Length: 377
Image (cartoon, rainbow, N blue to C red; front, top):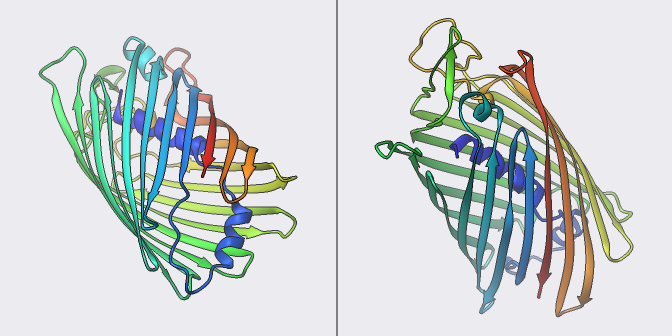
């Protein structure tokens, strides 16, 4: 499975799999934080989930488990297990290769350490599939200042991917990634907060797909991507409590990189409690992207770098999603059990990527589902 496809699936699944945003409680809890209380550890919790992504000829599904436990009011440990069973007959596969099936398994461990107004998090993840392994280690620090009104976040991740190719034991390469994060969250009023986050990623090594082909004058040639890439993303978010057990949020993200890709993401959402047990959330998202410098649907000349990866083309997407949480059982001060459901529909429209089977511009609709049970105790 390619690095680009795996990354796209991971992003989509994480969007649907994220915890239902308890926006109302979040704004009020942060706004009412005292100046003498140390930064709190995450609640002890356990989650069991099932996720499904289906769209564009790709189906990815599997279970996910997470357990978190605090020790001595200072340390919180967590472990997670994640499986993707992938069936791939995407446009790239059906036009240049045969459909295939494979499984990706991921393990993750993290430790949070609270000291005064700071939270230090050390985490590691490792994933493996038949022709690709990825390992990462990250360190994040969150610091509350000005009596808890402002939180500053710093983070760094070092990742290493090892790339192989089925049917070619002689092919082996790797890719290295350095990921830097800086963010600030500011309470504006007891009802409103905003955040700004900056990310920078530098990568070198094999950054393409060992199986994908490009086209030059209609002839198939191996894809050739640059072996270095630096990207940056800036994101702004505002969340507000409307005062009647509901809240709104809006966010904008701008992305640019050294491959000449520029992208914009705009999202808006609304959350509301219904009674004591139901929390519902709805959101809409729009994404647009310009193509990479070396992308071509059908190049008219041979160049050093050439790619027909549709994820590097000019395209946009529209998303509509819903998330619902229902409290199954609650014993104040002891535990709480919730059932959660999330569904997102994403429509992709490519402006300069042709479906070779029909000769028309390619587009498809994807569905992302997740169901999980979570317990805090």
